[in-house]
Image (cartoon, rainbow, N blue to C red; front, top):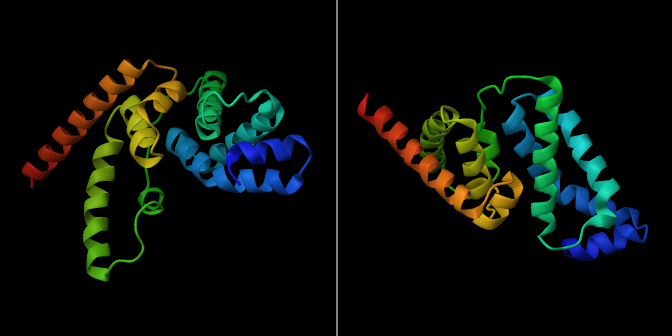
Length: 184
């Protein structure tokens, strides 16, 4: 059952459809929020806020974008509201290896796993040193696999702004990784 069918079922009162939709997105939204807050406790609270807002606003979902884009936009707004209310300074994001490994292959040799993890650690260390908006665009585009248009919608930016930010983020990441390789 696709997202739009699940939403129709939820609106008619199907509790099982609610559970299915929640299970489909809870881990991805959790990872996105965790990367933004770097706090497990805050992430759990914000995750509840996201799904509460989704439940309250589900009847207003028009289907102009995918449900995935819509829910990530809500998650982004919840994180922005959280920082506004708390007046916290954004801390450096720690994109953890297990977040990335969740999306990588499991059918590989032990040698390949060690080699991949070594490079993954270097990559994550470099990503964590980038500015927050670079980290966000890289996460949405390459971890969550959103299109440029969807990423723009989620981030509240134009398509051109996202393309530019993505290009600068990739260049900055490449430069950082080259510097680290050359300094060894």
